[in-house]
Length: 269
Image 1: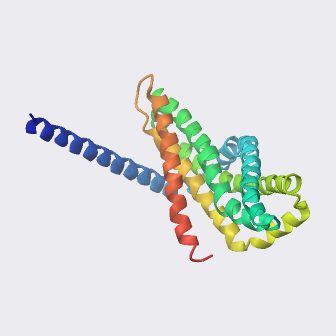
Image 2: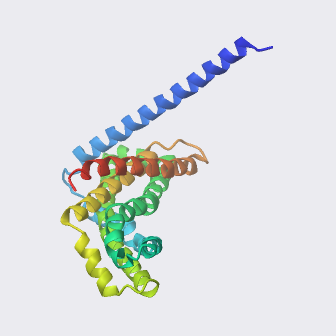
């Protein structure tokens, strides 16, 4: 015999859980927007903190070059191999450069690097700032009269927004070389021919689209990493939990931003 009271109780609990989740998401988004606004308003004020920004560019960008190189090389090789197999069935393998260029430059390189390298940047910020929050170092900065947003958030936000486009530009070159290697060695498409067809297919708008995505993805990684660090709760497991949440948040936001930017640029291209 069914239990209407139990069913109603389960439905009520489900509705409460959904409402709690939505409420938490709205609060998180609002807090993220507030921190971004504070950073944009306070950051450009004197002193500019150029040393802090350059230091963060080294930490976030230069030290990410090995990962970027490996990721981009294999992405270019894999995509060229997949497209080459399909084109060979139609006797059109000489079009390999035309086909791979748009997919790599406009979509795969910036998005995959944002999901991997951008997440690496964000989790590093979360772990560092979260540890400072737990040990009350952020409160100490405020007590000494400094602005934690300007001192800690602004340099990381700017550095991530600068480092990611540079890494994507480097990744585009390496991905092209990876595709060229597969085209020449596997499908007997001369490297020079692949290069010329690859470049001929690309227009300035495609590079603008790639770099615009990189700037947005870098900014998202920077602000999410900082916000998660600043809102880390106290406790032994707090920093690890905040870092795990950062991975999910950055990955989801990058995909949402990628869809929005693609929707914006596609009618133009």
